[in-house]
Length: 176
Image (cartoon, rainbow, N blue to C red):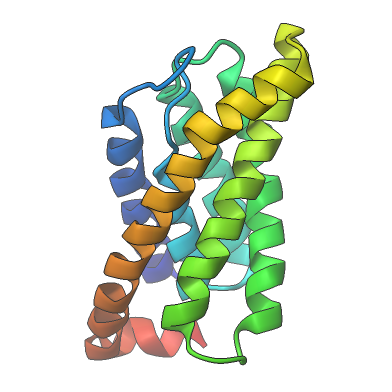
């Protein structure tokens, strides 16, 4: 593993943790998970399983530490690795199709909805809440706004990070 890549991924998790910690809760302590956009950015920049697995576990831990939802700690630790692996698979399928500045936000939207679905399903199951009504309310009031926010973040941040990496030869060459 490349230490420089791990440092960049750690910085992304740190930035995401701050965004996640300051996001206001919407319903029942559930808040939009902006830590996801940083995890997705890390996967797009360094799409190798040896980086995605530790990134997803670290992201799950950071998200678990900053959640206020009862049972959210367990849900985050399960949700993030699954979401990261599915996101990596989708990214590898479409990475050679079209521009990444277009596919990155679309994949971020898909990944955020997947993560929200897994997270809410686990939470509602553990709390014993009716999955139909509770899920729909939380999905529309928390997951959909989080999807919009994360997609906007990716539209803005990805081109900036891409430019920075192009100027930073050591990181760029390690990405391949």
